[in-house]
Length: 232
Image 1 (cartoon, rainbow, N blue to C red):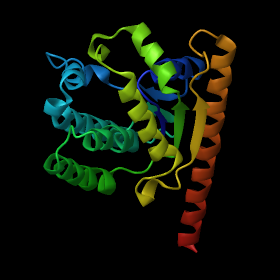
Image 2 (cartoon, rainbow, N blue to C red; image 1 turned 120 degrees about the vertical axis):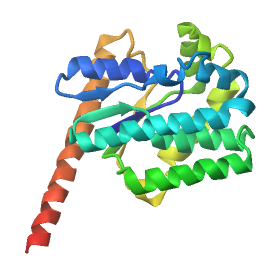
Image 3 (tube, helix red, strand yellow; image 1 turned 180 degrees about the horizontal axis):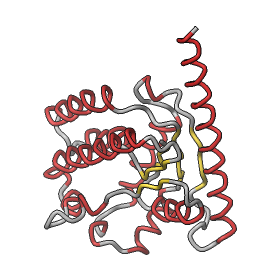
Image 4 (cartoon, rainbow, N blue to C red; image 1 turned 45 degrees about the vertical axis):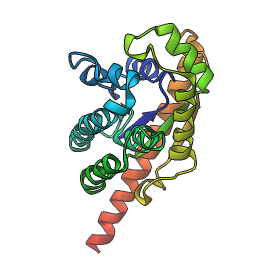
């Protein structure tokens, strides 16, 4: 499986939809926003308005949703699968940022880490590759403002800058668990206008599909060679 990562407002949903339309054999899994943006009073909206109160609830609930989704994709055995965000960005971007900003106490962070290390490190296989839609915070903020979601009304440019820094640490600088350090990475320029420019959109989709196909083949070849070695 492959993971499409990027900040809020990067254009992930738009790109996932374009990939799904362009390649019918691709299993594209959109981020289940409704699960945490539809719990009566929006959990996401509550977090944005009062992060100190809602950060732990938000991060642990989102982690449980992402683990479930990851395990479902992992057992489905569909190699050409791309998912919007992952349990890894949930941890290395959003939860880490909440802790560093003081939204999570040390006790809450330790509890979150215990859940993450138990379920993710032991049960979730590393993805075949990450695709990083690298979008400047200013561009992301403009897009967020334009789409005008109620749960994002209090989102600030400073918060997007924090998330951008966490994404860079996670994906580019590889400040992650050793199991993820060798995971292939494709970086896409998220400032490009792929939402309305068809040529740009098709070019990006082609690059992503080429990356996925190449690394799926390489992984399959390695697995086959390993199996042959075991049988010798």
